[in-house]
Length: 612
Image (tube, rainbow, N blue to C red; front, side, top):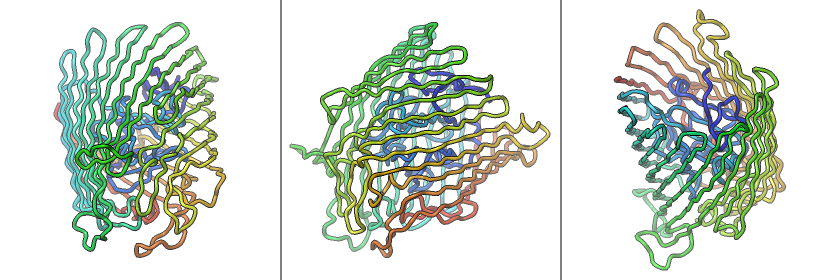
């Protein structure tokens, strides 16, 4: 179990010195997993709640510790790609599973590390940095006329690395109006200049998918067409004093059809689709100084978020194409952090000074203290206290339809979190046990006071959360010996409880949190070159949803617990790998979101080939 350097603070530190809980999904785990997308990979982590709408990465809402999907920051190689229109689109990023080296998951508020969007946590996807030139291709197909292809290549020169990848997938879907098409393109280059590095990346993502009851059970024929593109440049100097600048731009197009084109008997009131375009410009400058006391980090960040739409925003004086409304805001952050690194103690003290032009004319301070104490060679105790904030999305502020009404007077969310626990690490096992408590104020959710009312975007006056989270990973070769076929076993468990002032509200997201989640993942050999992976998940969700019958609202229905099993068979022959995935082996009927049944058993077979 080789130790990795992770970004759980402003300064990258070895995992053993990180004073926050960081879960890693490694390259080896990705290759062995039956997951078909990043979102499905994340579902193997007990501390993450994945509300899946469409399969295979079409669309999922990712939340942590009972928060909403808008409260988690999504980053690609440290570049914040969180979508300001809505967290529904934060995973519209051009990444294929073959591109990923590892995924770092920081649990709990991380505004000091990832900015104000990391209200409940952050997910940083780290791509591969190939050490030699190579080429890779993957093709797979299966049930529901599913087809997926990936291709990537890397060219390694003496002082630079250049990588290009492409991926395409499509399916007819597992039920009416659940078809999809997806395209990913990603280019990355790293240039080394006298031990300094310059990283450039650009990508394009396109999705077209039937959105059966995705956002309202009254309309089963919804359809979404999204396009996302981004470019970034990041540098890092070498030495005791590091200079780390980064610039990025991210644009997202969204054409949402409440009633899909070609649907018969369209009502007279439906006259146009929803058109949105968001642009995010960002600049970040970090200084790091290494001394006998540890690592000092300080700097600033500028992030401008804008939207043009025919639905969201304030009226424009002059329309541009389909856009008649717009809004814009700018966040300015200053940050400072000191990581004290001693023989047995790691202490991180820092703060984020945040100003947003849409929220207030003053700066607000969000401090953080994280500490770790090594009581034994393999055992550490840790504790942390963090404050965090999140601005409403443009959807929270302005989205109004026949069934929903936005609220332009929403306040920013505020939280204060405490956590403490123990970490274990040796050659055979790594693990942690964490207890956490969070006080949330002005938390935003779509709620309704009665079955007949419209969904309203509101600030809850107070929501308090408490829970326990544990993860254990075992190296079974070290524990049991090489004579047995077992490679690894990981288990995880989450318990979460929330107290809220008003229990009578019907919640669409936040108040329907996971109460329990248990995960187990096992990898083992069968015969020579043939291996197998098992992913098991059991979860119980609190809360309820308004069940629709024949497109009409019926009774309030509680969520039911369910168990899922996914498996993968791998047959490796030098540079060729043959595999078979079976998701939902038990053909379980279940819901992540009310009125939206998830796929039953789904089998895929594939082959990939690597040229070195």
